[in-house]
Structure formats: C-alpha cells, structure tokens
Image 1 (cartoon, rainbow, N blue to C red):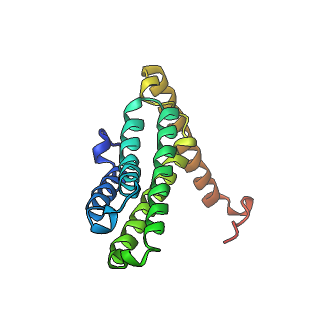
Image 2 (cartoon, rainbow, N blue to C red):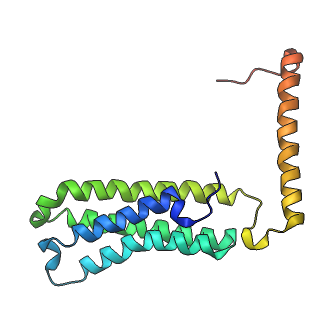
Image 3 (cartoon, rainbow, N blue to C red):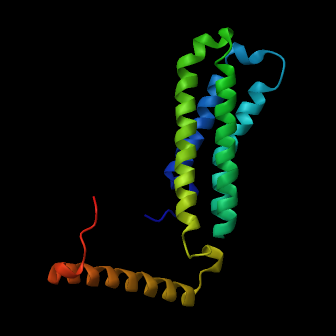
Amino acid sequence: MKYERFEDLPVWQAAIELAVRVYILTKDKFFNQPGDLRDQLRRASLSVSNNIAEGYERGTTAELLAFLYISRGSAGEARSMLLFTERFPEAAHLKSEISNLKTLAESCSRQIRGWADNLQNSDIKGQRHLNDRVRIVYQGNKNREAFEKRLEETMRKARPQDYPKEEE
C-alpha cells in the first residue's frame, strides 16, 4: 500500500499517540520536581513522530532513512527515560501507564526498523528522483522478476525431478 501523506502512516499514528500519552503522563505531580526529565521526555516522544514526518516529506530515500534512524533513536531515548522513571517509589502510581508507554515506544521502534530495512533494499532513490524513465525501468524489472518466478514455479511442477526439495 502506498501512503500519500505521513499522517496516514500507521507508524506515525502510533508515534503521535506515544507523544500525546507522554504529555498526559508528565502532567502528574511526580514530574513537577526540579530538573528537566518532564521536558526531555516530552521532546523525545514528540521527536519520534516529527522525524518520521520530516523524513517522509524530504523526497529521497536516503534522507528518509536518516530521519527514520533519528526517530528510532528518540523512541529508545523515551523508553530509557520511562525505565528511569519507574525506578522511583514516588512514581509507583504511574507503573501501569509507564509500562504501556514503554510497549508503545518499542512498537514504534520495531515498525521504524522494519520500514528502514525495507527501504535499504529498495532500488528507488525517492520521489525527488522519480521520472518517467525511472518508473518504466522499475516497473520493467518488477514485471521481469514476477515472470521469472512464475516460470520457475511452472518448471518445478512440470519437472520436479530437476529441482531438489527445499528443506523445511
């Protein structure tokens, strides 16, 4: 499925949910103590969705990948601060929501990693580089790969003795 806007991306939606829930969590009195834990946790959680959005809008696969890794790092940073927070007895009443937020941050991280892995294996350099010639070559390669796969499947059925069984 091709997404036209970053707002439609499931990973962006999860990331924005993370930021909203962190903002709500950090309204708790525990975060009113001196220091910048509240602000840093808010910035890190919001950075996840912001970097997905910025990378998506850049127009090249290389730039998108760079921003995805920054986003993934921010998800890890938010998770680390949540782990730090849950170690305080004064935050015991927040344990359940912290656990949920850690899970959500980890989910964002996994989704970003999967997307980045997929992009790294792509031969498209990004929207900025797409022109009619590149589209034609790309589609031709996809058609060729699909044809070769169908041909091999047909050959396997017609002459199974020529193809060793794959180990399960």
